[in-house]
Amino acid sequence: MKKFLFVALICNCLFSCATKDQVVYFNDVNSLEGHRNILDYETKIEKNDVLRINVSSSSINPDIVAPFQMNQQGGQSSGGAGGGQSLSLTGYLVSPEGTINFPVLGSINVLGLTRTEIQEQLEDQISDYVRDPVVDVRIVNFSVTVLGEVGSPGRVQVTDGRVTMPELLAMSGDISYTGKRQNIRVIRESNGVKSVGLIDMTEIDLFDSPYYYLKQNDIVYVEPTYARMKSAGFFGNPGAIIGLISSVIGLVFIFAR
Image (cartoon, rainbow, N blue to C red; front, side):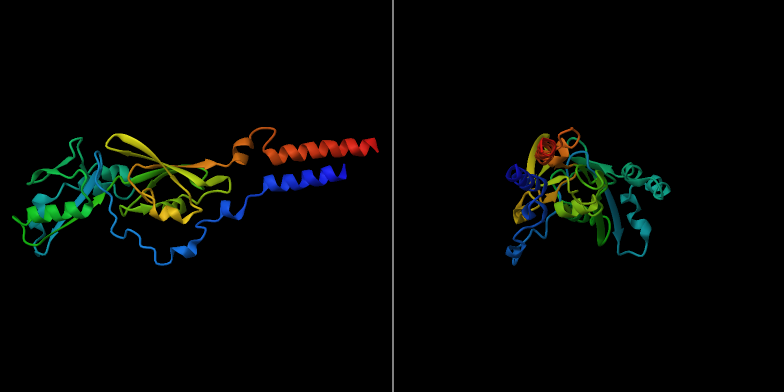
């Protein structure tokens, strides 16, 4: 009986504890020495994106670029408390055909282009009317949805147009101890077709994953651990079951004595 109780106690400890490799991020991180990342990564514009485009010039007269500016009164009046939703109403909505209607220039195709490519294209066309134009393009509605076992699940607004998986998790309060670090799902839609990718935060392979850089409207889901899923029931996990059996046998043994 003592041997059985000792074995049950050991099993209980094994089932209840997680290993270092299951918890620690970036195992074998030293092998990343000299690893080259994609430094010039830029998100490509998709349908229904909202772009904020500002045009300026080296001219001392700001009115010279006024014809190329969208009326920003609505955005300025709601800037203090309106948030991204109000600001997006004053941006350029990318149509289902992948175009925006830009002042003076008319319809401009932006689908599949990066912000830098759009800026260069607009600067080239506006230079026919304005000397040395400077164009700045931002994606107003760039956001990623985070669900599951993180500190603060919800919709994360990205202001600089680029975010990595580690950055997103940090912005969401990190993965909780009840979340799986090895099987993070990324649901992505491209040209109306959905795809699902897997990220393992415990391995350095994530730095080469196509899901390392997240795209606008991605959905990131952190699965709960087995113990978390079973915690709602009476028998929470294998460790609890073994513990219960051990307790019952121990009581039987005591009363039998």
